[in-house]
Length: 106
Length: 106
DNA sequence: CAATCATTTTAACAGTTGTTTAATAGTCAA
DNA sequence: TTGACTATTAAACAACTGTTAAAATGATTG
Image: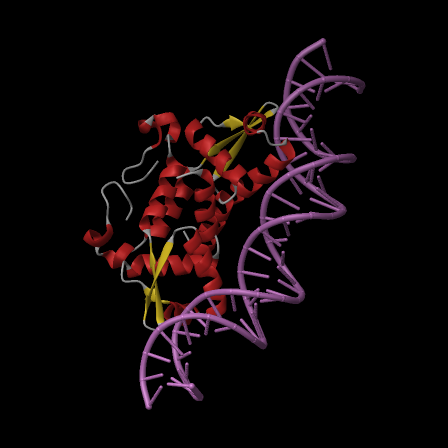
């Protein structure tokens, strides 16, 4: 994963509505949630939400699948895991005992 | 950690120069790096960098300490760990075997 | 104290982002 | 094929972000 991909993913999540969308999709798992359901749950206009879906999709953080009239969105965990790895790479110069906390990256 | 703190931290990292600064500080560990050294290493004007330090500091991602004429910046891992936890909270509705990969959050 | 070095602040400007409204594009059922 | 439903696109506008150059602050040395 390269710098510009990571910046794009971070920027995509750095907005309240998109962060809320992503978290709902993380909880929902592979099945995903329909666009309209998310719009209702989050009290956001469909047009605004569609704009945000595009940003998240382009960053690779979510995927979509059409089912009848509905479009289901779901989270793609790989990109987020890549992002986290990028942030913590070579933490404390590789000197693990200097900064690692159990169960944490650093 | 609440939503607005997480959004602030993500936004702080969602910029090439700030992401590069943060990663250098992650590698450097608790000792930190002087402002001027970072400016030189990243080929960024001190004024621009100072602006970015403020954004990262305000998000709680970095800390500063004055030593003589120099100001040393260092990474604060807690905020990033909190951010990662927030993103992966209740992943796949808690159904671990549905999405967990060894060594990953999800 | 005056000069110098390291860093921060300010003001100005171009570029980007998020929301709204209205129009458009697919999908389905009668 | 018409009409209803779900979702996306486009244009316009206010608000926010990042960079630059110049001035200002704070710390150190002679």
